[in-house]
Structures are given as structure tokens and as C-alpha cells.
Image (cartoon, rainbow, N blue to C red; front, side):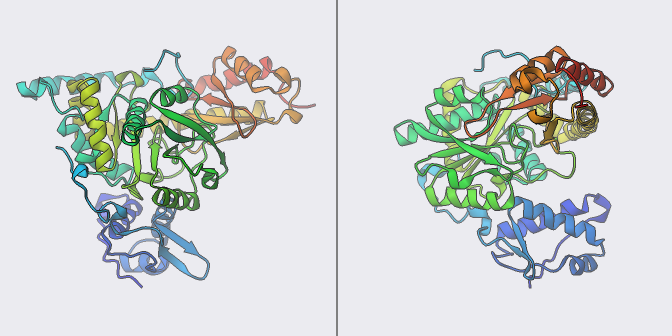
Length: 471
């Protein structure tokens, strides 16, 4: 049994997170090898002088991320497919791997944040700080991959909050997830000298597909079930796959540990890339967010994120954390495309992260959005019980499935298109999501509707839909 030598600072709080980080790094460094058995939760809790529940929470977090696996009678062990260094350090370096230091307007979407809660005074104070302290040459053309200060802060932030495994050189600042994914697809197509086969989750965001096709992708839908993307259905000739493992859009499913392992194995076996769209992972309401897939396989996964949900989409600030060769290709592409993102906003975001202000803002937003989520889910259960709500453990939207057999005179017999129109008429953010492999569903956003107005809007929706319950 492994001797763990864990360092835990009780005064710092977040004990389960500390244990998870220590164990995660032990696996990545090779100190804990694949198959190594960990102490029982009760034994480790006694050794650390902590409650057993804290250790259980840490083990469960790492099992969800794919670092650990538990079997009845066999205890908890390091997952067999996790390599030392999570794979990146084990890969031989090639010369080209060496690191170098538009969407149309769609109106607001169900996944949009409440822009009235944008921290205007905090942002203004940060702008003033940056303008007062930034040296003159900081305003010159810089690295098209992003200013070093922001890449350093993002690498540290992603490691701390998303359990990513990325250095500042692996991070490229982009205008958002959309541009980040597009540039990666273009880089893959250029490397292969042809258009690429790109697997996407089904259902997925219809707005994303034209951008991916324009970037040179032949898009192939792959079904999603209760455990996430069906890895066994991935096409054998796929060059890459786009996934939303932390909170699948739109269904809200979290990619299961077994599927995480299968997806990483598929990528390693085929040489394909996994493009991880981490679009709303900061907003997890029932527990700490499940660590990103990139942290499990940094040599095969590109992590893409932005501040579009945390702050505002109009800022056009995002990032990718990618394997060195991919990061270098995307950085060069930014240089050829537009010479990089505006520098002042990059320095502002770096300052907000470094000062802890960004984290405090996220904590406030989690509390507020959870209140709004609870209000919407409760009102739907009360007034429209023929709607089944899914995917509410995280994010800024929920996924509604219509049980048409139980609906009373619902619009078009429970047709999601009619229901979406009725929802919008009632003041709710709604859109229909179609699927090549299943029935259509309805996405309802809750971020922009204050909790005290939710019940009234849902009652209006029930009236527009023709009734509340079967009598």
C-alpha cells in the first residue's frame, strides 16, 4: 500500500480539495503509480487527524476525474490508464514541439449570464490600476498568444480551480471558446493538408457547427446518453472530438469516470485530439466542479474556456490550454490573423485573478444563480409537472424534456417548438435543441431572471401552454 506523505494545512480550509490536489500531483509525478492501492478512507482520515467524510470527498472527486478507481473488495487504486506526468512528460520531444515564450448576432441566449451583475466598479478600478502601473512598452504589440502576465495567472488559476496541467507556455489567449476551437481545427487541417473529420456531441449547440465547418471540419454527430458521449460510437477516422465533459450542453450530463477513461484511451490509440469546451464549469452548485479532462491527459486534450459566463461575453476574452505543438500552432495563427487580443483587458483580467477579486465575484455569482436555478426548478415542478428537468447541478440553464402523454392541451401536444415560443412569451429564455439520435428538448435559461420573478413567469408559461396538471 502506498505511503502518501500528504501535506494538509488545516488553517487554509478546503481540506478535501487540498487532499485531492496532493494525490493528483502524486499521480502526475509518478510517486503514485498506476494500480497503486490507496489507504482506506478511515485509515487515511485517522492518519491526517481529519474526518472520514473529508477523505471520502477527495477520493470521490479524483474518481470522477478518472485518476482513481474503486471496486468492491479491491479498495481504491490509481487508475490503470493514468501515466506518470499524465502522459505529457513521457512523450518524446520533437523540434517542432519546443515551446515559444465570428459569430453573427443572435441576441441573448439561454446560457447567457445576467449582464446587470457585471462588476462595473470592480472592472473600472482594475482598469485604473493597470493604466497607472503598466509601463509604456506594455502597450506595444506583444506576444500574439497573450500577455505573459495573463498566461501566468491563467495557468495557475486553471491548475487551482480546474485541476488542469498546463504551464504558461501551454496557454494561448483568444477572443473566446469559439475562436479557440476554430483555430485548433484550422491548425489540425493545415497539419494534415486536408479537411478534418470532427466528431461532436449530439445534441449540441447548433450555433457552433457553422464555425467548425468553416474552419475546415467535416462534422459527425455522436450520441450522448446518461454517462455523456458514447465513446464506442466515435468514428474510426475522426481527427478530433469536441466534448463538454463538465456539464454537457445542452443535457447537463457529467461525463462519467468510465467514459473519461474510455475517451482518453481512444485519443491515445487513434492519435486524435480531444477539444474540451469548458464553457460553464465554474458554476457547479452541488459540489466542487469535476476537474477538467485536460488534467488527466494534457498531451491529447485541448482545454478551451472564457469569461463569457463568469463576467460577460462582450469582453471577448478566452483561452486555450493545449499540448505544446498545438499551442505553438495556434499562437502562430493568431499572429497571422490579427496580432492578438487587446492588451489592456488582458492585464485587467490578470490583475483580477491575481488579487483574488475574480474568485470572490464567482462565489457571489454561484450563490445568486443557485437561488435562481432553485426557483425555476421548483416552479416547473409545481406548475408544469409534465416537464422533466435535467442537468441542473451546474451551469446557467436546465434541460427540459416534455412528457407529452401527461401534458394537458400543451402547445402542439407538448411540441418543444411551441413550448419554447410560449416560454419566451412568458419572459423566459428558451430555445429548442434538436438531435440526430433522439427527441428534441428544450433549454431554459435562469441566469437573467431574478428569483422573485420566476414563479410568475412559469405560471404564465403554464397558462400559455394550456394548463398545469391533468385533472
